[in-house]
Image (cartoon, rainbow, N blue to C red; front, top):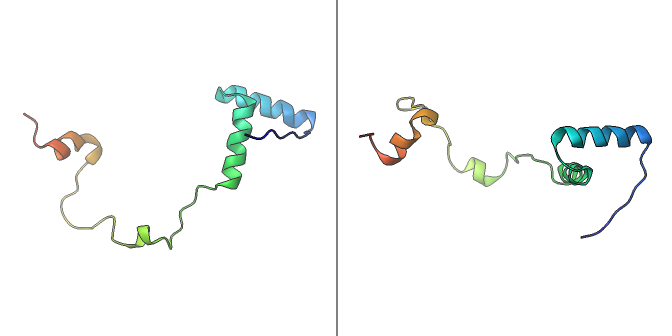
Length: 79
């Protein structure tokens, strides 16, 4: 792991301190998260073959509320 240092204005330091405290993490953790989010954006490439290989949702069949009936759908009818 590498150590980096930088100087920031007092106002930004205060904002960083308050934000990290509000989220219940250290300033160091907050800064690492901010760096990761800039370097590794959470985006989906719509041209990725994984997302184009097959339809994920088919418009056929009855609508089932998977969130409420997941056990029954996975393991069969309830006894």
